[in-house]
Length: 200
Image: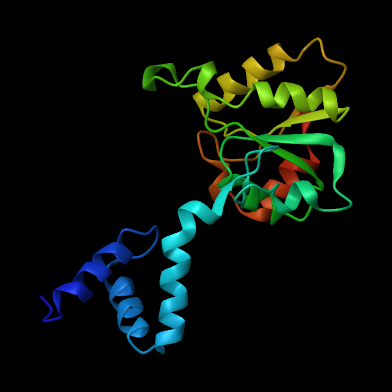
């Protein structure tokens, strides 16, 4: 039991709710912030306060982007626009980018099919993907979905949906832990899975 002011305890509790930060870590961060100069604290508070209105989703792929703008990957020169890698959530893009192997575009589905949890086809960002396949003249669609039951079902649905399109549909090579989320796979494993991807 500490003897901090209520305001500081509230901050510690908020910090502790962040992924990977326990009570001790949250305590250290909060006490460290007390040593910041007022200008730095004000800047931090402003960024956090405006986060919901300054950060949004890319209208093209669904990745994080500055509000009203396309994401840095969609606007980056030199990206291969003939290949799209489909992921469940934007957090998985960083994991794939860290492999330093993939140089194409992405498409965020916004989840995966999970009928028991009430998530169906209408809840996924599929129509935008269909439009992009045509407008970008895509040649390959990589289904980088987690190798659990829902991820495999979603991949099978997408492969069947676009089977008549003139594109190659591939999936990541096995080697990713079965039933896991690719967000937690290391970059070397993801790089190998991308390099060894096979036709779905």
